Image 1 (cartoon, rainbow, N blue to C red):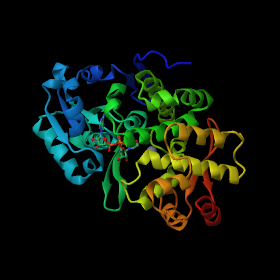
Image 2: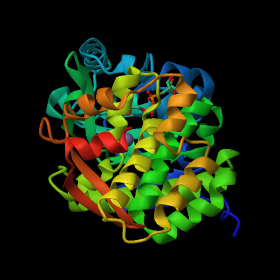
Image 3: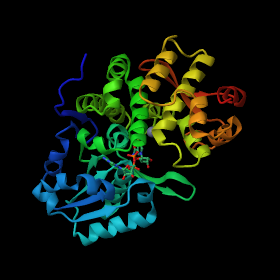
Image 4: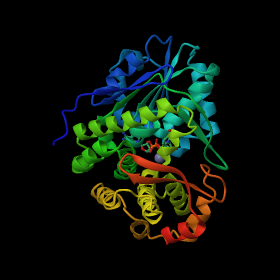
Length: 367
Ligand SMILES: NC(=O)c1ccc[n+]([C@@H]2O[C@H](COP(=O)([O-])OP(=O)(O)OC[C@H]3O[C@@H](n4cnc5c(N)ncnc54)[C@H](O)[C@@H]3O)[C@@H](O)[C@H]2O)c1
Ligand SMILES: [Zn+2]
């Protein structure tokens, strides 16, 4: 079946208060309306995105007139220094407590802007207009905000749900291929969690996604957002169920850290993490669908992602030794030191969370 026509889809996140995520080729045109009756609006924008797509914001009079702070994207945005600049900017913009911050950029800008909004005058509204695939399917929904500390990524942050999210899939046309691949890794993870229907659609639409077909992107981003919305509504503060979203991440974080941060895009590392989690499932006898691992590996390949650790090692020309990966996993912040907690995939839509493996088992999967 071909992708459906590229009309916007709207997903509700049933937190209190609830909010809407609009996904599709017309989503950006709704940013001004999404700010609602805000007394004032201030924009935090990724400077690369501004140079590529800033004119689209200017089409909305309230946004054209709003004060705008342009910031370097990527992890450079997630520092105390930039947070201070953003807070000073909101002060200079004269934003009061009924004001609204708009972020226009990837997950980095969203994390920084969300944190600034949650701190400024003890919390003002934020509307996210995410511009990367990763931010559209993951970072912009759920209210987690953060900056990095010397001791690690995302160590200082808050929960601050947005007032609305406008995820315009046409913006993804200008993403670097690696950034697209990174988002696709998270899409595979989410489809594995969402279950058979989403996974089967992803298999059908994989070639169209690679071509950045707008209808295919809209359908899949909306499906991922729908799943994340369900999880976030049930567990807004990540006390339980939301941990399932870490599927592939314990291995993925170790790969990112051993390769050297920035060398392997997050979602590309997560994709390899998914293949390792499947290996764990098979080895521990937790995989209830014998076709599942092969199916996911084929899907990863169809999307241009590495489907095994060996393949990533070849692509990077780096050893990524099992010993180094094991040591990095022992320090993963999501698990107790020394005994990393794994989310293990059993079948489409079914995971076993909180699985602890021995060092010997981990070593054999990471060989
Ligand atoms: N809050 C959450 O729940 C959550 C979830 C996942 C990830 N994150 C965070 O998100 C961050 C990663 O975000 P990201 O992957 O979206 O990347 P990013 O925001 O770091 O941006 C990556 C690069 O893409 C560029 N870019 C952005 N949009 C573009 C476009 N449309 N066209 C061309 N270039 C564009 C940026 O300028 C930057 O150079 C990490 O810091 C991670 O911790 C947060
Ligand atoms: Zn992730």
